[in-house]
Image 1 (cartoon, one colour):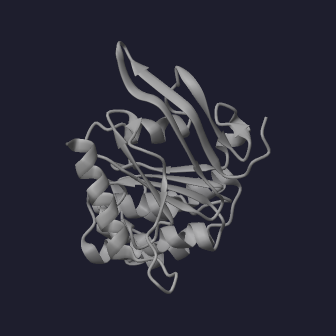
Image 2 (tube, rainbow, N blue to C red):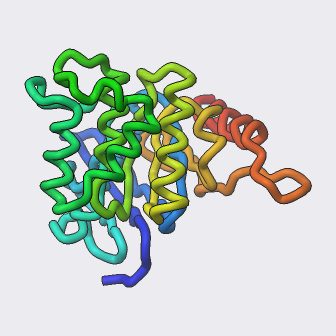
Length: 243
């Protein structure tokens, strides 16, 4: 067992029948870091996140969180996953979801309630979540990821149903999970230009393989992250992968 902190994906392979969904993917996210993972439909992003959460069995390789294999329950206790299409208990209110998840972790509800406020969800928390749109459910799932002490947060295209204003709010919450709470964040999706403003590294998946090594964000002459230049670099890498 390694003692390295953060998330480490080592030679991960996943097969569905005779098809390789992932073929030897390697990547790492340090505590407090945000790695953007980009690729087209069917590239393997969701499979990678599900395998990293211990929800899909790998045929080879392993995923470690703070040096512990995620197949062990103790490692998974520090994981949070926000899927693109979150499931909810239709009869429970948003507020009851927060209470339920906080109780499951033996944790304070306040971080999740604060995230719900930042996401513009607070006025709707008394409503039953069964009638909520996908965008509302995505915001609730992100707030729930703030419960307890998340060591790693896996985000699977979590802003796909959000309008630009709500996406900016969500990106702010994600930034806080990494920068203020020290979680390693793996953000998979296709909204390159929005994500480029908060990530500090990125990688491209294509047909289950990494299209080159993970790369740092582009920086300007003053050494500050340049979101526009980073987005352009990611888009160029995607075009090259698809060519």
